[in-house]
Length: 402
Ligand code: 5AD
Ligand code: SF4
Image (cartoon, rainbow, N blue to C red; front, top):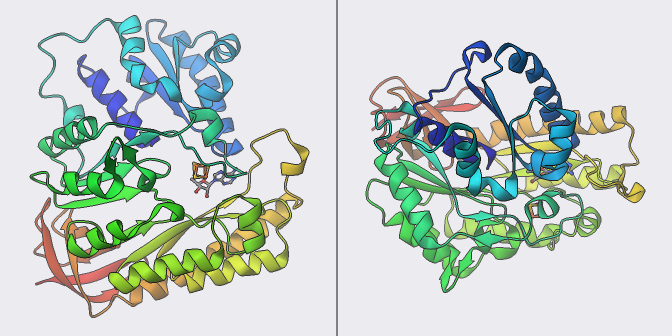
């Protein structure tokens, strides 16, 4: 979601004639988009802001903007007290009003604009935010406290955004939110929203991130079966394979329920790829609980998994992990190694299959199941084609365009 916000922020600068640069010394403005989902992310954001002191001393005219979740959590006042050289702080809840902060610092965008700005061109795969915040209360998670309860954007706004991105060159739209499949706006459900986006001209593929296991329904399964443009891919965070830990995390489902859900979806769409997130070292996680997570990885046949060390997000001592850093690290390493091995097995299952590849270059694209796929020739950037999968490299499929 921060990547999506960063792209929108960059476009707002683009309307004022700015371009992106990787070189700090060339920058007239710097935006730090912060995260606080784990303590490490927040620490990184803070030290990044601290390092910008030197830039600001050398470029007193330069403008420094701090945005995002860490900005929301820490508060504008605290940030400006600690870093008086910061010009504007816009917390995650006020991100829609970033334009106001820009106006305050740089004045309004000129009427004529900068229509050729590269910042308006969409990447092949463009993000479209459909909701902000989250109304669940997973015990480890800071998102509901920082971003507030779920607010769903109106379908009209979402469709306008998607249309603009398709007009700007995008072929794939990725709908974003914390629990996207909980989407409900007036009478529009998640599946109805998907159907509306699927009908937009120019769209080659539709993905969404992240759904929550609690909110899938038969209407979604039916739509998935019927809509070839809807990606055969779900990123469905499970967090743990242990029922005891899932309960403590207040995830709202058991291991069996999660597995039952993906089994049902795979029964309807056999080539569905599923990836997930795991947290290791949750307070009280025993060796047995951790073994359940390892076995979950295999049983879920996840194509990929992001793995995180638990990071306490409150001052409550009961929410501190019982594991010390080496023990935490050992579990993470073990899980990461298992994920690597498992992903290769899942990748190899695709050999001999015909996959639809959306090409980014002549030689590389992504399948509907979100596997990277290389071909020797025949890919047309921005278009999809059928490819026969003949083998695999480390993390990618090797195919031949049919
Ligand atoms: N500690 C570690 N990982 C976390 N995540 C969310 N909160 C925490 C936390 N306190 C992970 C979850 C989530 C992903 C975006 O970040 O796995 O799915
Ligand atoms: Fe956090 Fe996701 Fe749980 Fe919401 S559903 S509380 S964002 S982990």
